[in-house]
Image (spheres, helix red, strand yellow):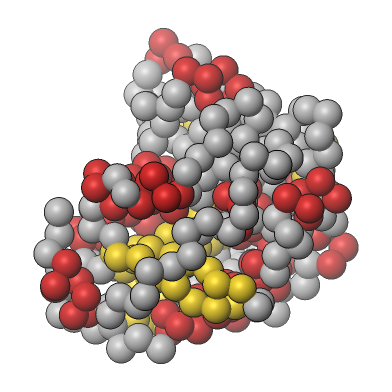
Length: 339
């Protein structure tokens, strides 16, 4: 485990946070919690393996106490980039840290990794279905992320021009919303297995161009590639645009022109029946790029990061491609941009 005194010297730890916002036994099913065992943030915080390298912090936003976790690389350097990684629905920040591996990548590459925790294990991502709003207590997560980024920007170790967002599923849809409503604070975004919530199509007015990379599987049963109801279950979890329409939305919003550059990623597992095709628009406003990875035959999982996915989770969400590592791909894209 990392030396806590070194970490606390860089980023002082505040008082222990409120661990649980409300009981989960009355929470309605949502995108990632369908039939899966309910998580326990308290148990995850008590797990040394999940908490390795992390320091817990709290802040007040939107009238409530919120928490997040932070990992700083072993350096005394200043003006470091920040990657904020959002968990999916029914997720916890410590598990997301372990799954995505940004602690190790950040230590190697010299960036700070931050993992926020959603109220009742989810994010108010703009789908705005009554069931979701009740479960999430109609939380103002945009206000939370404004407060979080404001707190991070005030740290002398942080370069305020290089704050990035990465997330999948419910966390990815939340990033779509943040890209719509607070573009000025974000230097780049990576969205995995998530498309633009339908209600945002008419209201989304980004104030600036934003580099964005999307990764979507064509066989995703929870966030359908063709768009429509999320989750495919009776509980109303809202609707999303088709992945291709979401892509066109961001190409237009970023003022991109011309044809994209095409690439075929190496098929590292020819037996799995999955391949990945890439498209990148490089002629966009203010020097940004819009990139898209179409994962043919892949389901609802983080590419290269779902090898240990539980059998039930794979049954519900389908298989994930291992042709590339989503976290490494995300950082390779983001690190080239600044605000």
